[in-house]
Amino acid sequence: DAQESRGLGDVYKRQVYIYLLASLGVSVCFPKNKFLIYLNITLMLFLGIMRGITVGTDCLGYSFDYYILDNFGDVYKIYHSFEIGFVTLIIYFKKYITEDYLTFVSCLFIPFFWGCLKLIHYRKQSIPLALFFLYTWGYYFAAYNIMRQMMALGIMLFFMPLLYKGKYLKFSISVIITALLFHQSGLFMLLLIPLHYIVTVRQIFPCKKVLYAALVVSFASFFVGKAYLQSLLNPFLALFDTKYVNYVLGFEEEELGLIGNLGQTLVACMLVYLYRRGKMDMEMIAFTVAVVLYNLLGIFSSAAPRLTQYWTILGIVLLPYFVNENGTRKKKIFLLVLFSYSLLRFFNAFYVNNAGEINPYILR
Image (cartoon, rainbow, N blue to C red):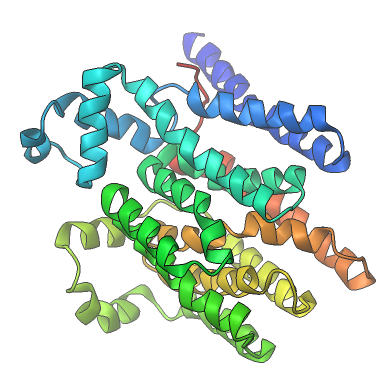
């Protein structure tokens, strides 16, 4: 009876995510309702900063290292490899603010969420739609798990206006400092600089046939086989730290799976087909390339494609842009596929597979 009661309790706690999904869906239907917009922003922020220690794999995993780190000499005692900025943040947070771990976790979530809102506002896209895709495509929940990377991503999103204005030096300095301090994978954001220059300044846009081919071939590579492709990449993997390579290649948790990758690739193909040159040129190419890389890296594990989140996150402004474009019959089919896939992705990742171990939701 006790086990049955606990199971029912877990099911009930899972419904929190359904209630928020429903609220986001209603807001999409009534995009001018500011009450719903502020309500959803408040709910997303509240759930993010008030979650318990077991909501998110790394949320629990980081706690052991957090309590060990009292000074810089303790970096050799912890399990995870943290950048110097993150170590410094922990030490001085404990020294001058509080030793409470969950308060520290709350502070990691805020920069990510703030950065996303900053990007949405700057690109002048529908907030209800952007929040819906931020939620259903899993970026919101990634901040529950890979907290350090998503915090770094949020900080970089805050500096994105520098890129759009062509202030490449200031943007690169901001990215480099943030990446070296908090998560070195963030250096991947620097590649947006040549992409922005080529696509936006020089106005060189790749042929759609090339984009189709890249998407199809990358998805088909899933069937080539993990062992064969790994043998080709071994010389390149040797350039990286052994601990990191073992972590990436040994991570077996499924998030999207074959059907999920197919749906994401199909959405990207439809975006390429419907897109007309204009406001979102850089986001369009960045998102497409990121899906290609996601397919290729996903052959090895679900940890490897995390690198692509620095570019796929641009989908939170790209997808609303497509939804709000003038409608055609082909666009209606696209919208049906897009929203169906978004809901399927949400339920498959976070209910069927419980990616990032975000279920059941527990308040701190």
